Image (tube, rainbow, N blue to C red; front, side, top):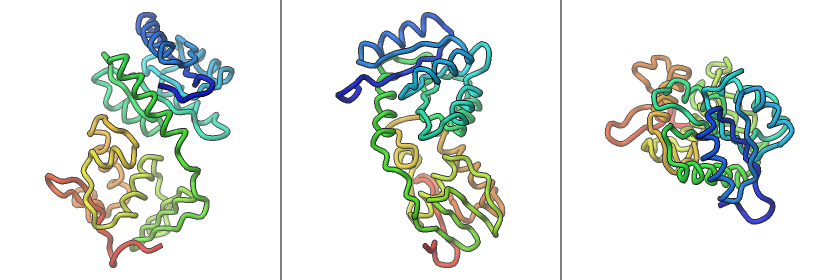
Length: 243
């Protein structure tokens, strides 16, 4: 349920009239103020006028697709980016991962339970509204020639800036802050993504992509190692990260 006070505004972007009717109906009954857009261009117009607290975004849209809508919403944000929950087809793993890398906060796979979607939306909004502002002077983490600056959201290896997505950067910082500790995929999904439940392959793919950017040999990782049957561990060189 949305918190007390004015209703939270949710923009539903879905071109299937039946799905749109079901989703908007459930959200309205849950106490949200709803706007609907049926294509990508209308979604961007409605987002600018309606200023939603959250966007429910189908990936397959006429005009411009959901990935491009998500990209433009992120680019247009003049403050904290509006949270996005994607609606994806079951087989769209590549698009789902790309959407998460573009900054989507969660996803629900079709066919889905409208009640589950309402719960996911509530969870994403609670995270967004309770998240503390980024610390401008967070200590820089160093491990050998690998450096991560949480305040500046910048990571370097041997003096070269790494092109990390937002979620890859968050994952790296979390692991560097907990050297030598093993975290399961479920724990990482909760502590890095903030999800109570979700597709564990999201973690697997992000670990693989992070390794490709920070390891000398991603096929034989030395920093982010796999502990079989348990999870992943950051194994720092030279005695551990320094701040």
